[in-house]
Amino acid sequence: MEIKYTEKPIVQRPYKKQVIAYATLTDCKYKTTTEKAIIYFSKQKISRKINVSREDKETLKRDIKKIREMLTNEKPPRKTSKEKCKYCEVEKYCV
Image (tube, rainbow, N blue to C red):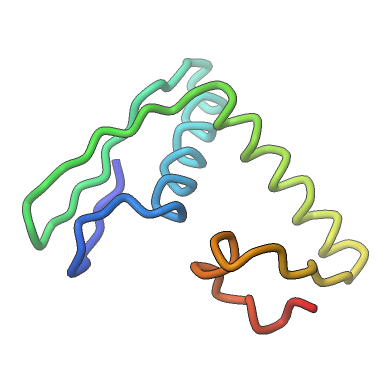
């Protein structure tokens, strides 16, 4: 479960990535399979159920591997698309 305090109770891509990461960590720690997560929007008192697939977790692991490679090589990523980059806090550093 993730709690968000925001004006818009919309499940955004970074919110979903965050609960996928929590599910992946839970699976590793407790040797279980997490298939659902909840994002609770506290301001509106609304909860949204999120399905977490095996594919979601594998995608996250690939993303983490790419990030580690970028950090190790000190090579910033190229901007890919407005959709992918619009939520990113470090977009201004990409080439």
